Image (cartoon, rainbow, N blue to C red):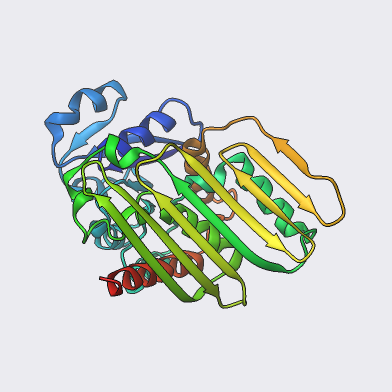
Amino acid sequence: MINAAIVGIGWWGQKIVGALQGKSARMRFIRGVSKEPQAVEDFTARYGIELCSELDDVLSDPALQAVVLATPHSLHTEQIIACAKAGKAVFCEKPLALNAADARRSVEACKAAGVLLGIGTNKRFWPCMRELRKVVDSGVLGRMLHIEGHYSNENTGKHFSSWRIDPAEAPAAGLTGSGIHVLDALVSYAGPARKIHAQVLSLSPQPRPLDTITVMFEFEQGISGTLAAIRSTAFYWRIHVFGERGSAEAIGENELIVRLNGKALQRFTYEPVDSLAAELDAFADAVAGRCTYPISGDEMIATIAAFEAVVASVNAQH
């Protein structure tokens, strides 16, 4: 059992605790860090988590093997480096950083310290995404030509926090909230991007934004791609990989459609899973040495390099 600390106990931090605590046989939270401890003391007491207000308080605890960060984006890099220096494995919610240089600093700090770095991309653990990976890796689609991704939801308006309206913390409309999950998927299949063109159209500001982000990609492998995200519409997820012999499309959490040249369409549905629990268990297994963590440092850096380029392209339009 990996003993961990949760740092940042807001809306998403509480979701992480609820998915893991008392349910996982691999990891548990024994310490928690919040800048507003009085606001969360009932929550942490209910889950048996000892509460404090500073990261340093938990980094010096020899009983802890790992730290989970659910903090504002701009804090991630220095917090990851501090965890690495303390010898703690660290799992960081997305985005890993706001620019490629900081992402590289985090990856290199953990590598130098010999500790694992995990990233919060729970959509990879949805059944449809796991099965999409199997289809693509099988080679049945042939050479990959194009990939499309879309992720929209209503979370920004429902779970408002002041730091989430700061363009320095959450640039490019829905990019940090939902688009980053699509970006992670695109990079995981198509590799690093070499050309990016993006636009944001906004009709209404926070706290209940009406805006869209759309992005066109040319990846280094010669694959094209698109990304879209809307922060006000009902939940929708789609990753669609096109090859020379067919395509495979992951929809929602549990549906996969495969279209092969000259064959009838195939539609598959899968039993739902708790993707938060699944990603944290995978992290815990890797910390314990039972498996290899499924996301490499190079992938993490390539995703944030693309993220930075998207933000630069959006800013260039204004």
